[in-house]
Length: 333
Image (cartoon, rainbow, N blue to C red):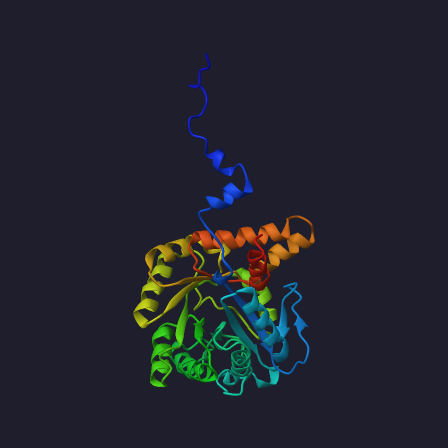
């Protein structure tokens, strides 16, 4: 007679025995439509310029940006987030290239809109840092500090010109107090009430932004600790969340993604609006560098990081692997 009492009665491993069974019971699924491609477009170039700290990512010319947008759409990616990189000579203290209707970002929005129409959600970075000669996300006062309220006036202008160019969603990324409300009012007053706001609600002052500075040709002197959030804080993020929603945010974001999955989970549990997470340049660079060394399996690591972000609660993920990952998902991998 066989006695079973000494063996486990529950065997969760039964549901892991084959790839098909694991796929059937998977609790979290990643889809191409969960992904958004961040893309940089640089003024005055005819060929893409590689970003050394981000292998495989480039500063696009206007022509190659159009191609990248088409490829993203064909792969099933949901959207593209555009960052403009102006010529250095056009940077100034107020970031006026960012509110020039003919500026590089506004031109890129029109280019992509002409190429893909409404088949790809066109998003734009609404911030001054790419356009200022000091590299900060706002206007500086006489003491060299970022002037919150003077910056809000500039953001209102940026919102209007980006909306005039045809953007679907503005990404309010500067972390100024009251920015969402000012942007919403500016859009509504200029008959752009259908343009959505993606609020960078919890944008932390992170060491992982390093490669991004190269990508946008940053002129930053100092740091952004007086306006980006302290990595030590979570309750502060929830306060920012409440304020952004009260001011009219349609979607909210946590940035970076990987080091802040706990924050992402808390935000996702607290709201009934879409939640985005931005897998930033340093997160990308770490995986690519380790894979180049042969220390990790690149494709599996990419898939695992994206799945972890989705599992934590993101309904949208901004990632530089968006098109590549979407193609893999579409192929059934």
